[in-house]
Image 1 (cartoon, rainbow, N blue to C red):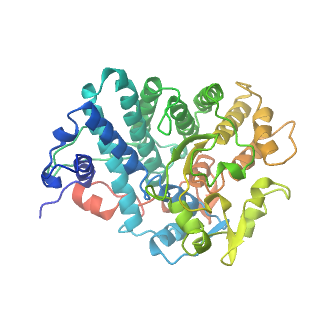
Image 2: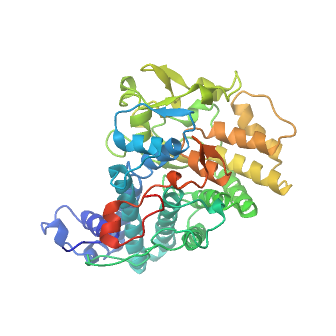
Image 3: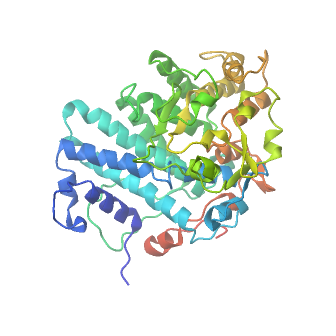
Length: 446
């Protein structure tokens, strides 16, 4: 039986869909050269890449949801009836899990659209080439990075040179070919590609770029990448540069903590958001974390007492939780048709504080100064001499339920539900259809 590699199929389908709706040639027969033949069309295809990465299965909610469910540690609970997220929560994941499958497929769709844009970059108007190339590179870097957090053992495991990474696909594909095999690189090689893409993008992107990826966003993501690699000097450099660029361009912390969430447009502190409206965009965080009164499902995710006990009594972040449908809910994801903040300025201050403390440095600000910016907004007293555990706890509370839980747990070598940070049960399986079609090696434990 003939099988097609879904890594390639994804790009062909989406590139075809970006062509003019007035063309009456059957969609599957429209060749990629048409979509990639002009400046206008390539920019439309770039819009298709943003659309792919904002899928509900990728940055439209499920990557963040799965991060939180994997690191639940009795602080949140999955109460919903859907089996696929429950498998993530219980760490008993089937290789046929449809959410995992579609996360993989939509992620590689984003990567392959980016590859095709990069392959046709010479057709973009010269004045816009750097920006378009930078956006495509950064979209590819983000997608590979997010996949690595869920589908690979952590970098902190200490065996990146031998642990399996991801299939790295860099070749533009506009024609479906049967029998194409793509093997997995090492985790070290995967991170090397992520860094190469993000670093090149950072040098090409404008400082600001509306709702799209910018030089600020590239540095913010570089800080995340280096932090996950425990390269604290580079994470400090990237976070400090992002903070400086943010200040120059009027990006500031919102006046209240609650004001950073449930926004129909980017807040003053958003570095990169997934745009959601009643006309377009997905927000699975709101769908699963909210309740029917606010357009959510049945309140699939609840907040447990173990998490609530971590906050000081007068913490504004504690007050954002609310009771609904019989349980405590996260107010961050309450309202329907609201943007999903992917990176906020607050995270960068906490990254800079942590790195400065670890390195006994004061680049940009002292650890106390950065920490207390966050505490002050939360209505809390300043801490004169913070320790590493204090900063890490502040990070946990500030970024709670925003999709950073499993990343930080793995980086810091923590445990969840009795599992060590490098347990194979905290790694998603390669979808079985991908193993069957492409011959990709399955993760250990599946």
